[in-house]
Image 1 (cartoon, helix red, strand yellow):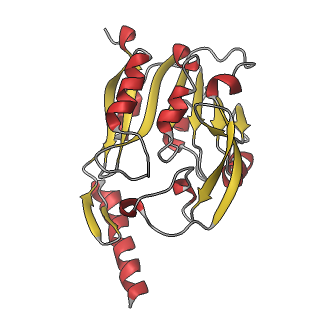
Image 2: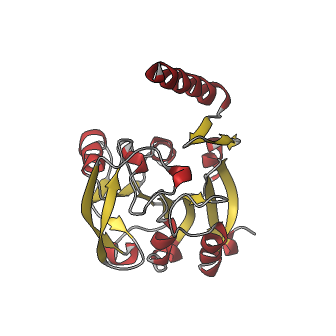
Length: 239
């Protein structure tokens, strides 16, 4: 019976998301409501770039962004074997470079908690409100600063950056101050309202870090109970 109910909820959610762009979300018996806003069509408004940097590729990549920037060079970054397999199997027709590392504010090694849903894998410890299941694996991964990772790369030109690192987004930004100088936009899956990772950043801390690098919020792509996909652009170029 429990499995039947689970399958029913999953099917209902698939229909809600496909038709209305909403999902019912529960975490350990706590009803968090539904996704309120999803508008990826705003990707069409993004400024021109020469290189797309995807931080947190996951097992499926970011197809909407890859399609939006179909002829641009790709820098793909993720510490998981599953992401590497995706790049090797699905991105052979693109000018793409893959780095199998995690990104942060300093060079180190950390343990990543690999979840059954690989896109939820995280370097942090989830709180009860964000708990789904125990990790299926724990792996030691190298952590590098984006600035260091790209220090020997030439010809990147104008870059766009996407960050989805399950609670580690602020650390990525703190290690990317030089790279941000050539960035025309940053799209980040940012945590808000609820503490979904123990010791995680607050929304205002992330926004302040972007402001200190000359960026302001320009678009809200999605807004959900625990996360929001936010787009930041250089203040000097918004007019």
